[in-house]
Length: 211
Image (cartoon, rainbow, N blue to C red; front, side, top):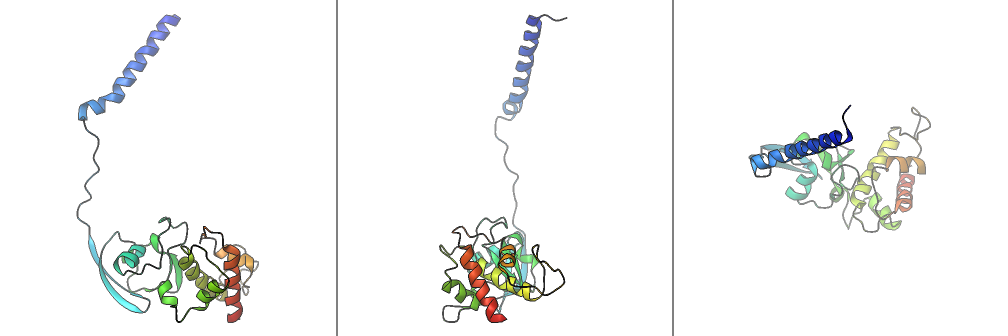
C-alpha cells in the first residue's frame, strides 16, 4: 500500500503533467486562433411588394427581411429590438400573416406582399388601430409600438377567422374578442414600458367597431 508521501508525490506529478499539457498548444502556435475567413458575400436578387410598391433588390443571401426593410428600403418604422424573435418589435405583415421579420431571410419571401407600420396609415390617414393606440395611450416610449400595432391588426383578423389560441374554450366555434384572447395572442409582443392594459383597451375598441 502506497504511503501518504508517495500519494502526495503522485498528485504533484499529475498536476505538473496537466499544466504542461494545457500550455502545450499555446507554446507550439505562439498565436491565438484566428476566425476562418468569411469570403465574399453571395448575392441574390429578390422581388417583393412593400406597402403596395414593388421592389427588386440584390442582397447578400444572409440579409434578413428586417434589415432589407430598414437598411435597403429605409423603412425604419419597423424596429430592431432583440434580433432573436423574442420581443416582437420587428413584427410586420407578410401576405396578411404577422411574422418576426428578424427571423426570416429576405430571399425567403419572393413575390410576397409585405406591410409595415408605414403601410397601415399615415399622420393624415391613421389606421383604426393606430388611432386607437393614440386615444388609449397604448405606448410610452413607442419603440415596440409599430410591432404592437401590426400584430394587433393580425390578431383581430385571426379571431374573426376563427383561429383558436391556447385560451380558446371552443376550438371549432366562433371566437370572442376577450381580454384573455388578446393577452394570449399578443404575448409575443413585449412592451418594456408596461402599457399592456392600454393596448388591450385599444384593441377592444377596434374590435367593437368591426362587429
